Length: 183
Ligand code: IMP
Image (tube, rainbow, N blue to C red; front, side, top):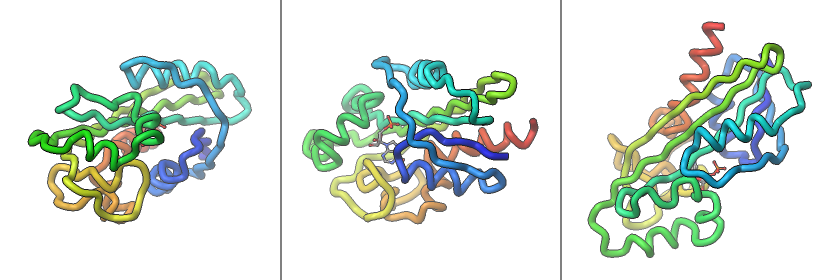
């Protein structure tokens, strides 16, 4: 099955492709509006609605964010903007002196079968901690400052496969994979 993953993020694409190994996953860099709301689900549903080209048989989009406990979930749905503006070092600066380092990465995948119009959503959550200093150089985004629960390495110190075994995106994609296998 051919699935078009609509994203400009190469890191996300490679992680998803690695798990959906029985599909032909193709990256499509088409823009779509990302509405300002506190819900990843709303972002995804609005995004899917705005992608009206039905020539691609099966499409997926993904929205994710880093939710930091000490900041009541900030940057959350604003993670992309915050990463571009202050980056991982900016987050570490904001967290100087803060003892509670707990944080959660969330991923929401939206899938649409353009043949029948069926839509399905898949969520993945990864609890963890914000490190004291950035470590590692693989991956993307906030990977160098996020340590998932059960590990003492940041995502950026892991291989793609290892990160996928812990990550929010790994979990949401494995749910999508199961769903596709049952269809
Ligand atoms: P969006 O899903 O494209 O809106 O972007 C979410 C932002 O959250 C990205 O730009 C990254 O900065 C960050 N992010 C999402 N997933 C990950 C991840 O797996 N590792 C590191 N940063 C991530």
